[in-house]
Image 1 (cartoon, rainbow, N blue to C red):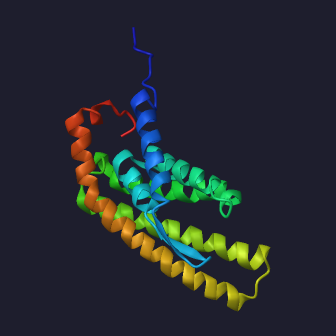
Image 2: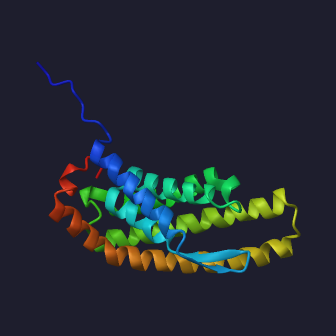
Image 3: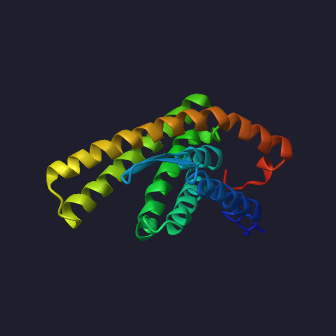
Length: 192
């Protein structure tokens, strides 16, 4: 008789780790340096990328999206855009996780981690700038010169955030892998 019981996509340990990493993404968003009323340098994207590197595309994307979603809900300036933020940050963590886990690498190969972190971060920057263009030009009807000036400012800071995210996440990823392995937690994660 064939075994018809299938393994659950997300086990208890997966759900716990997604919750923990979502909370870390949420908290890291508060570590920021505001640049006027327009934008900010922050460390949330570091942990969005790290989530993807550690957990792969789906779980990593969920961590990045959920943590950022709840951060936006806690800030009146961003609350209305929380669902959009969820999708864009999911892409950030998801792309990083997809590339870093190609061929069963599980986020442990430096070249794939670097490529995933860069691709995820650039995907997010492109989505962020596109969202701002649509909002500023089509919804708020701002003049195109004003929109371009805003996009240049936001784009510059977003690229700086992307560089910080790539460098820090790729550097600390091996440490997190070691901690997960030594604790025995890594073997209990089915979504990796």
